Image (cartoon, rainbow over all chains, first blue to last red; front, side, top):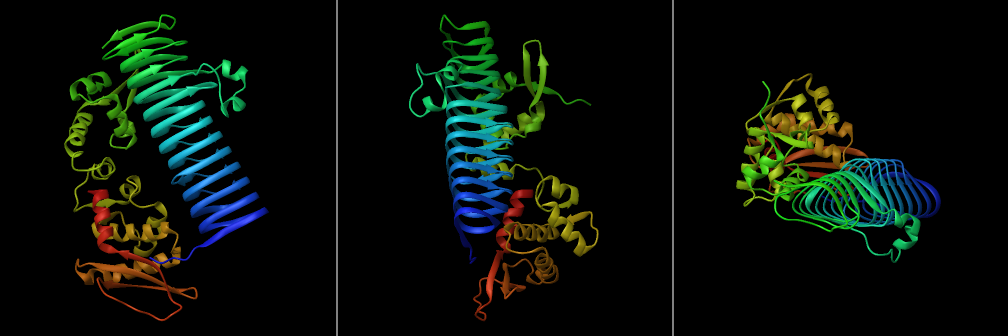
Length: 243
Length: 207
């Protein structure tokens, strides 16, 4: 199939029409009216889309708001990102603050900063350094969280689930999460279920797993394990049973 | 009658699968979300499943995953035989076509409740074309008309649908593939649809 698509390139302050493009590359204060279907999207500055975006790949720098859903291949995000619909993506690399009102389906998510998802979040690999707020269930093959701020989720399910907190905040994350916030870094969740679960600074009602390791700062009501169970003396576990 | 349920704990014991596998299959939509039934028990929240359905499904996944990728499996697992008729509600519910395409089709054919495979195919092709954004609603009607009138003449042989546009005027035709064709300059191919490929796709989706 031969199709001719043009590029959208602009820098400045402008409202652009939606449509099919090859590359969308915009800088400045840009609003796109209507949906966009493109092979690649690059935005710099303040970007707003009033419709859905479908992109083969992309890089978002600055402050971006999508008032619809985003469907994309690999994407790099730096800054403040808001999606009012769902996010469906291959690999997401994200530094900054991201807020998604709908649900997320991804191959991999690599987050440094603060991720808020109001619905469910599904990924094969979920790696978050920072804080996360997930209204629904986080379901991932491999969950790795390094806590820098108050975090919560309704439920975390998966294969391997590791939650930890570094001794002190470092790098770019120390500018995003000030010491007072870092001091409150803690994960609160209803249930966690996985084959291999290792937790630090987590409050949970139920933790179910094959191998369960409960580390510093944890407060868990009930642990049900199928294989091994370990806990540091300082952790609070009200009840643990082998099932 | 109420369905017999099985707890997650028991399910993992009986089938020998891990939490990881269960949740991976859930992510890939091999196990429908609605089969995860949450209930409060004295130990807190517990998840249950419809016993017969989940056991049969897990058996099927375990047997088939050697030959197929999980994504292919997800398609094949939707349970209906190939020589099928479907109601319009089913077509929408199973997400085979969008309501917009269906409505367009009903305008063309008059009201229809039951669709045979061939009609589903036309509808599916129309839907794909509309969704690609390359053809408009008006052109969609043209496409549907061409298929309805001419497709059966190929008697199941391979053919391809070609959509042309020149200076805003569009037309489409079917040809038995493989064949070469040329046309005047200025005309542009908007869309080419290999009907054979679409049939395969559709069969996987509804079979």
